[in-house]
Image (cartoon, rainbow over all chains, first blue to last red; front, side, top):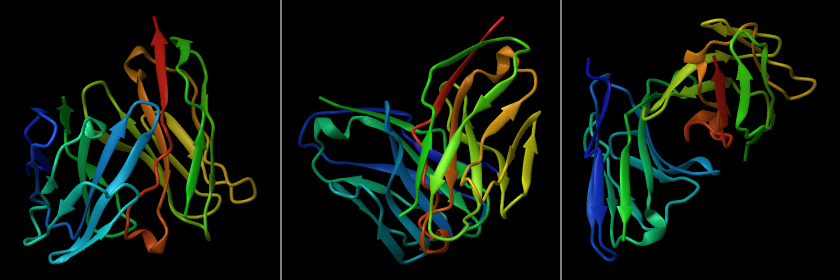
Length: 112
Length: 114
């Protein structure tokens, strides 16, 4: 199993550009989440999904969209990048609400 | 919603020292509690967990006990190694039965000097 994979590993965007961060898992997990990690802020939840076709907002959803058309994939879309979205983004998945959460290696995004 | 308070650090110790990282939480009910570790340049990985009051989670020499009375889940290790240098996150399961995942603390940066 590859576990949770994320692409790209690094990305630089200009303000106003859009892009999609990819996340995929091969463990057949129903629950998937996107977090951003900023210095001194820990991890904050952006969006999450409890199964294909079902998504919901987390703590900091503004400026981001998600969709879940398959169990395996959970892409995160930045609609119009802003410098405040400079961060490290982590995707995670788990089998049930109570079970261990598996994290991807992260995407480091810089918006200039 | 749930929230977590943990010492932020950096915490600097010498090799073979005793480690305690404090974690207290506020939550509705009695959620499962987790400690995650993040090594430099990597994602987070589960270190240990406890699912009910008085449970003790343990792994790689680390331990933490679920204390319902004090709403705490302090991480301890008897003798730390340089390889333990990392950022440690305390995380109770989120509200709503955990559908929204974990509520992370800000993390404690641990530095172990040889």
